[in-house]
Amino acid sequence: MNESTSPSNDEQPSLQPERQVMQATAIYDLTAYQTDGEPAADRKPPTFLPPVLTWPCMKIAGMVEWLFGVISMIAILTLCAAIPILQFVTLGYLLEISSQIVKQRKVRAGFVGIRKAARIGGFALGTLIVWLPAFNVSDIFRDAKILLGNSQDIRPFSINLVVVLLLTVAYTLWAWLRGGKLRHFLWPAPVRFFKSILKRQTYQEAVAGFWKFTDSLQIGPMFMLGLRGFLGAGMWLLLPVLLCIGGTQLPEGLRGLSTLLGLPSLAFVLCYLPILQTRFAVGRDWKVFYEIGEVRALFKRAPIALWISMLSVWGFALPVYLAKIQLTPREVFLLPTVIFVIFAWPSRMLLGWAYARATKRETDRNVISIWLSRLAIVPVVMIYAGVVFLSRYTSWYGDWSLFEQHALLIPIPLLGG
View 1 (tube, rainbow, N blue to C red):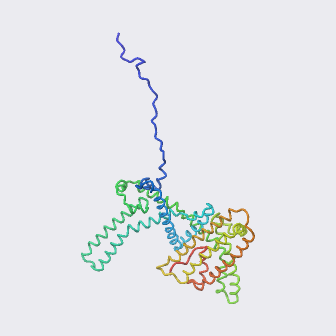
View 2 (view 1 turned 30 degrees about the vertical axis):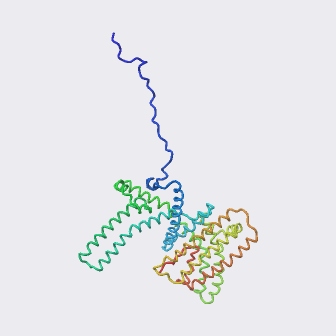
View 3 (view 1 turned 180 degrees about the vertical axis):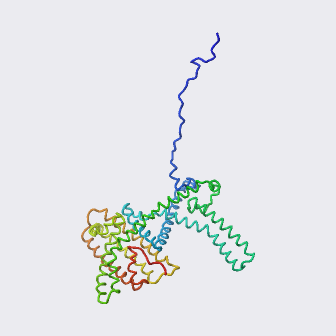
């Protein structure tokens, strides 16, 4: 009898159920460091500083970036304020400043989009730095062409210029593809260049990141906010301004009456319009421009704060009138708009701060502070209305300069002639 070659049941290996492969669980989520299609390593470069110095250096770098963002935002708003149509973006941003302070109950909320402005400023500054050698070589080529004419001696200069231009264009495009941040212009990242320049994904991520960043700027909503705020305030200012203009344009018998009605009506409108415009920025509702009673009720809750904000609005608006005494030369046509932005920004922040205090309180302040603040507003608006009324005799645009009203509207004719 042949023995079975098959092992017995005891000798057969037991079949264990298949165990699942253990999956490693990520301790830290690194996806937050990958924005705009950028790898995490490119967004957060490693630091070689000791831990005791890392935190102070990061804080200092953050402060420098924030200050650079403020300067960049002033430059961006200045350019927009000097260009027709884009002026509504500047006005919309100023209204958004007050709105964010009211909604967040924080004065620092008035610095809207500073980090994004720093990104744009870094993009412009980095591009300028990269192109400086090309500008220098171009000047050398121009001088050589003047001295040497069209002889063969100018050929090396032209070759140098072409080579520098090609390298500069390639370097600039590579920095733009990586995100256009300032550090991208300062370091070319050659290893990454050869690894990703031929990949289609590189260009797709660059385009997607560009549109994502552009959409985050909220240019459209800012424009519409500025346009609607302009129309609402202009509706209140139209009749008083026309009456003031009638003081010189109407027939002799009606000029005195027009001036007598125009100046007080302008002062009356100026008492309410800054708060009405701030309320509109917060609520985005047209009907707030007709709610005079609500403005009076808000004033009773924070009379001193609102008086300070009104004083800042009209006081900070006066320096711009000095820049309008004569036609601005083309070489410095941005000077009036720089003054406008620098002084309008803090006044809008104070308006938001005062309005937030008024909405936070539920009861009125004492009668003495209410009436003292009301009486103190009268000379402020009367002085400002008087300056506006007399500015037509010093402004290059004459009577029609009364329609500018840059404290509440946009600085329309501040462009040089």
